[in-house]
Amino acid sequence: MLETDTENGVPVLRFSGRLDAAAAAATWQAAHRAAHGRFVVDARRVEAMDSAGAALLAGLGEGAEWREPEAEAPRLVLRRFRTGLERVTPPAPRKPLPWLAQIGAPFVARAGGLRERMRFLGETVLAGSTTALRPWRLRWREVVRHLDEAGTRAFPLCILLGVLIGVILAFQSSIPMRQFGAEIFIPQLVGISLARELGPLLASIVLAGRTASAYAAELGTMKVNEEVDAIRTMGLDPVVWLVLPRVVAAAMVMPVLALVMTVTGIVGMGIVMATLGYPPVAVAIQLKQWLSLGDVVGGLSKAAVFGLAIGYIGCRSGLSAGRGPRAVGDAATMAVVGGIVSLVVLDGVFAVLFFRLGW
Image (cartoon, rainbow, N blue to C red; front, side, top):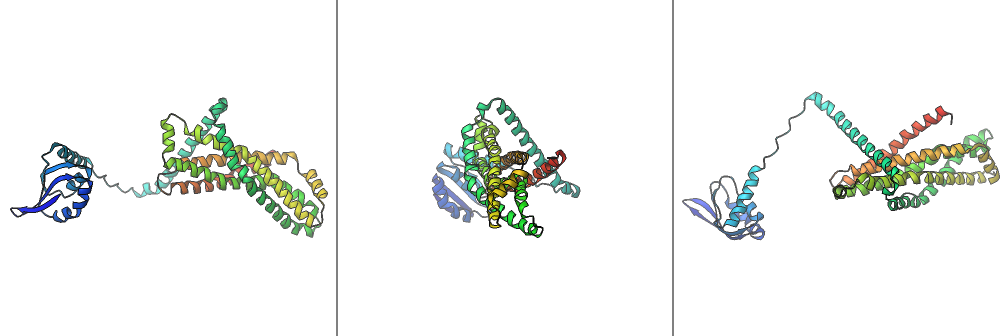
């Protein structure tokens, strides 16, 4: 309860009774309207007080004359609250960096991010090598679940894209081939392109768009909800518990998706060849003559490495998410962009490597 009067011309704010959250809310505006200039805060008749009441009294102003509650409990609450406010000092403003330091600050931040990536890569490799010696530590049930989500549920999309890519490649290559009467060589052109290059690359892009973003969103949500911190508190390694099942599943499912993309692309090419007047037997003979097992094995090997990279980047993006409301979306975006960029870089490395090996 709040009463206002004057003593010797000085306004006095008299508080009495129970000063809890409800009473503070009811008297907040009236108390602050009366707290101007020189005034007295008389809280001697306050019988009980919580933090809301203490915040009301402490926020009335520095120039007030205080009369603390006579009851011990509210007096201690008020003193504790005012002492806490006195100990809180505002942070000193940061001094602006010199112009040379401002130029180098982005490079220092980039170096810190690179160091964080290398640290996470080292943790993943160490956890993977340790788990390889003790395979029972890996959560195989989670591996199977991620195999289903990243592989089985991606089959319809891979089949659709594979058929369409095969049809497009066959139609586009038939235009220049027809000028030289070499339409019969379309199967070997499309087959080798799909087996060595386009099949693994397109399947990896599908995996990066579907799975890497899902990994980043799932782990980013766990990071925002502090579930990752809870796992560390229980003495468990988040890399072994969360990252390895996803990375292993991505590496295992990627060759299968690449093979599905290659086979369905060849089927789409066969449909186009049939419309051009070439029977399936002629297409099969061309593929058998020019498409070797080494082409298929090389493409599937690249696909496995692509799967490792996609799983690693998706998990790293999720575990490095921030705490704000946009953290999960930013993590998913970073996972997709980083996954596609890494695919292009790795594909270039494999192209140079295969050229040097004569493969």
